[in-house]
Amino acid sequence: MTATAHEAVAGSGRRVDVLGVGISAVDPDAALAEITHWLTNGVRHYVCVTGVHGVMEAQRDPELLRIHNDSGLTTPDGMPMVWAAHAAGAANVQRVYGPELMLAVCARAAERGWTSYLYGSSDDVLARLRDNLSDRFPGLRIVGAHSPPFRELTAEEDDAVVDAINDSAAQIVWVGLSTPKQERWMAAHTARIDAVLVGVGAAFDMHAGNLRQAPRWMQRSGLEWLFRLASEPRRLWRRYAINIPRFALAIARRRPKLRNGR
Image (cartoon, rainbow, N blue to C red):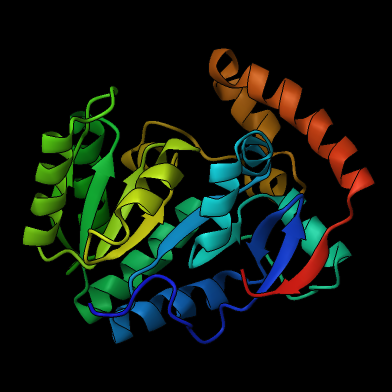
């Protein structure tokens, strides 16, 4: 790959300003087409899959806000992002859900021979994820996987990870570190890793069979957060109790609007 992450790519222009975060005005087909374009043309980019949690984290962290806005795509992962886009006049926007985006790209990767690398989670989850994806998509080439320690890597360890990924000749790196850690990792490594980086968070656990997905009707009605809260109350109650009311109040004060480019 030769192009940089800031090189213009067809179709990536329009974004919806949601509290300063530029949410890409895309649907699942458009997101897949954009990633396909990068992989076909050798363009380095990273993809943030962002909902209310990511937007609210960005309110407290200017660097995270910049990372979202410098991405190749920041997809609307969650119905509140879709509703915000529609309110801004982007009627074409549909939810681009991380686990479904991962499956769609893997299906295309199996067809076109693109290689994938898995980065994040635990060795056990990675082993099951690798097996499940390979069974679901015959021909999918997963050329490596790495489970980093929970602590921050040393410079030497980080260099070794970058070398391992580049030596594997991976074209897609799936990043499952959760928000905002995965966004920071992708932004810090997009210039060093010769691949497209896609942060999909909980998709690793879901496709490994460790975490159930909400029923489709809950996803479409914006109630997925309630399903996830019931599944992981100790980990998620504070996130939802704080973020959802703050997001609603903030959106009432600062209406979403369409903008061109990042």
